[in-house]
Length: 295
Length: 272
Image (cartoon, rainbow over all chains, first blue to last red; front, side, top):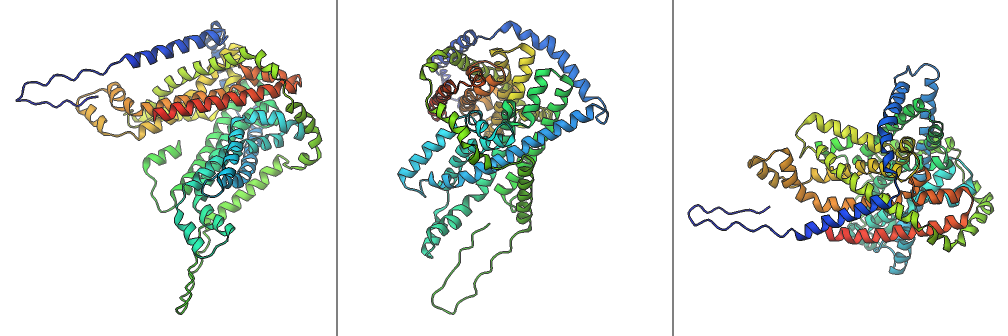
């Protein structure tokens, strides 16, 4: 914490006194009270926690049994292929939804950037984007999509798309505000029109970053699509919901493993692309970053 | 892809116009692949926006109900709100504590054992790859419907996020204090506590608040699958088609999330 200068010849300097710990102690006490209050107010039946150790072990064994059966024998081959099919449906839902949100977020991103639009427009657009960000996708799906599109992946995709607008628009606006003004001046000096300036001076500069955001959002949306599935938007979530209500542990184990495999595969491909886009081909990726991209 | 500023000299014998760079093969291949995947994905889920126009009246009925929220309902469900906030507090506290331990194990700076580092990384990426709803379903099966299932599911979910964010911060710490600790003969625990912890503390606290925000947001998800809190109320009202009540809760969720966002942003700015 403190660096003490040792002077061998001179009489020993007094040891610096420790800074007061009153504030720290008070913060810890406050947290403890908060935590204790939450434990009491949460209405959780804590005694049931033993279920983890009794039932948990049994269910884990059942899941393991399903996993270690020959995956090419009936009915396990069906379990595996059904899980993969549904997971792919979720991935498709996430992809279409992300693309929809990405396209819609471009104009909003421009309107929310201080160096592009006027202050009034920026404020209004930002309020809209923040409002969208605050509403969970699930609520969009419940309110808007299911009554209009009916139960199915299209409703899920549109809900994910609308939900993505808020974050993507905000990130695009922030990227636009951080650009180098040089190219904008150059474009203006050569007599470029309004659209040309936006396209060639602004958009070109933020494109790599924005595409990286889109891919990142795609990774998030794969997880979010599972949630939408449980309320009837299809995909892996619907399958999980059905399996858990029937307590088919063997099939649940297989399905969870499929989710893990596909998610990690998509994440690592998308992470590698994001890395390549941001870092460019010229730069060497350091080992640390490589490790991060791989795991 | 890349902007080519055209130089236009007015006088002098016009120098040759610079050639447009050839489009890179990788970019074209990438675009074609993305387009093909989009087409395939849209076809597989039978994507079309036609319903938006044909069924809009269908949705409008619901939306009309939505536009007249039953405000009195908000105050009737305040207990569920207390429950949601309590769930988030417990899950955040426990989750970030375990997350911190895993973060120290998931960074080469603090973990000097190669195999333990790799094992932790793999374990954490598996934890992160399952969606939150899957954890809720698992714990509902284990401990029954209620707040406990929600708390346990969120704890696991939080460990994944907290460990990843904190481990990345640990990777970037200043190595000076570490060297000093090593020179003074500190053990693994001591150098983590006294050379690394003080450096990452502000960021770590800000992640804690961020995770708390996330937990409030996912309270809807938690409730849908039977994990207690306001989401459960929402689910019940939704299944009864009481859209006025659903609307009231939605507005309340919106306000609470916004308030907590603001509060945590203010606190985070003070920490970092």
